[in-house]
Length: 504
Image 1 (tube, one colour):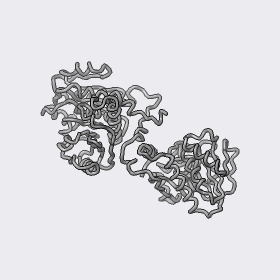
Image 2 (cartoon, one colour):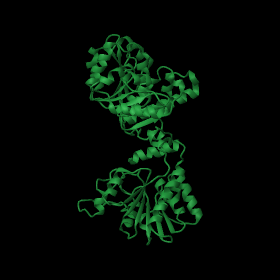
Image 3 (cartoon, helix red, strand yellow):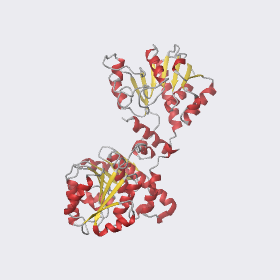
Image 4 (tube, helix red, strand yellow):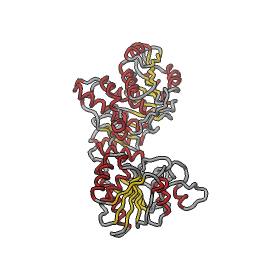
């Protein structure tokens, strides 16, 4: 079962896998036409009410498959304002066939007529908020008509995730049933709903309660569109136009001692991945070197040359002002250092990305923290996992290991195909190249994960981080070949995390 937002991501990922949206629209339209044929005989009059998005485009395709019926199509709005190219193409194709088409620009001019069946394709699952005109008036007229109604993907005006009337908390089925406590709002009272690829939570609940018949149509989206991370996973990364400093994530990187470069790479990556403020807590022996690498970093010095248990209280003070903590880059495996890591994480209850030698404490750790562990295959084996086998075997092993961890954690196991799992949801990322075996790319990934985990749920953040890090590595490899450096990935991260579809 998929939410409307997740369905949009899957649809985008399918296109990235080589299944064009135009083909998916053909399949969706065919499914709608099939639903019409199941509900009325050839020759019946069918009225299709279409919005200006892809939901309307599905019905435009359906109209072409209904040549045995008396079909009329009404577009809500001007053809010039149809929002997507594939929907525009299908409007043009429909006009060329000679099917009766009309437009409704304001509700006062709408006439339903007396059709034998109505197809509601005004608004799809991606629309939130109460219906506006002319759709609101059209929805009321349709709901009061005697003809049965087939809705495309979701009844217009109903929230597919909640089953409530869009823009409010009134239960759609309760409104239909005449519940006097339910507020009457504009939505389509459908008899049947044809939704695509997978069920949606609100629709399933309404169908189970008898509000309408629900059909889930297979339109050819491959399973990999859900399993493999892709550009659709960028969709949740939105930044409010009125956001302020810190609203988009504050990250604390805890590292360094034996090494100064690793915590610097992680912190710089966190900035380039969208973190508003990035603080770096490192031993004083390397604090000056870390600050010298990048003036935008906020360096917090810890006394001495290594992380020690006496620093834990200070780490908690710093972590209290951060959304996520990245622990591990450049720390080393000194016994006192690992004791400090275990003490800190054991008392921490936020989100922590655990990398490098800090992973050694995870198998025996007791904590309320939400952990995201980023081991390479050797580190995963040291944790007790099985890193061998093909991609399917590794995915199974990572999922089983994550499910057995206590406390629960998300694993991002790096490899030719990265595997991300929290024990329930398992994803794969195929981006990246052999040039990324150079040192430091794992530190970059830890920083990206920390920045994304400040604004996304752990498994989502880890999956997108793996994909974006590999995508940045692919861009760096295209420019530098096997001579790429980890710093090259950092420079490519803003582009790797840019949603090109939104920017187009």
